[in-house]
Image (tube, rainbow, N blue to C red; front, top):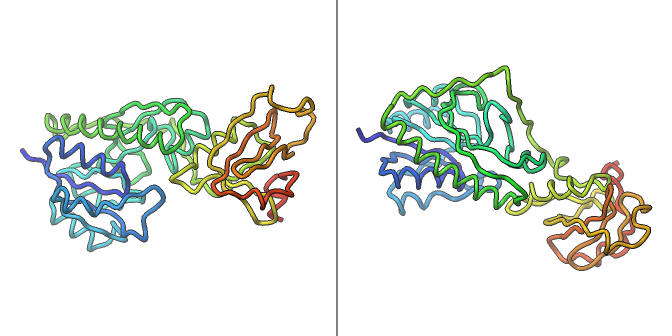
Length: 308
């Protein structure tokens, strides 16, 4: 039987699902994405897939609308693979045999929003991409497959590449499972275990000189390009964007560096500033050349000081 697949999503991960299905010689009867003006950070324009691969392409503002539901039902998919960034309704979930979701954590642990960002900030060294049968809950359906990947000390851009490779490998493996057993049941999650991560905000990517160098580096890595970068406030309601952070070796610091208070600025150049933080000094690299803006800044206070 030639199973009919629909892919829904907005990112490179969506494209990896498409490539895995095409390489597995599967029929993709539809690709659904958001209009360009509605795409979230780190999205990809997938419209070229219609010309490149002959996949019918649909842009919908609301996947759960009656018109989207009708279009999906008419396409008569056996399976839908989702990297969709929004909640999907019960009506859409009920159309295929399985609507397969993806989440880059070992469900039932670490459900919720912004998982890659959280894993970098929390210093989690390894994870898995979980493929699961979606239900009405959030990341709560039966687990179909888990593919491991390493996090390490990667910037988020590099981590996304590693995760996407795991997604590709997982889709290839999963379609083989479904070929053999179209009603593959998977395994129930233990809902007495696990946790949910909240949505991250600007406050989560705002640096504070009272933080350790380790925490600052993790925050910066978690929101580096293609995301808008971490914030460092230096004046009332004004901040600069930090794209990279390094801890300076103690041998390169002045003899009295440990006596300096949190937020003391040791050096400012066109590309970076050196800042005393908790237990060390960090070198913070900014996006634009802004030495002139910072030349008179001697101290960086905690962000609340600038937001009163």
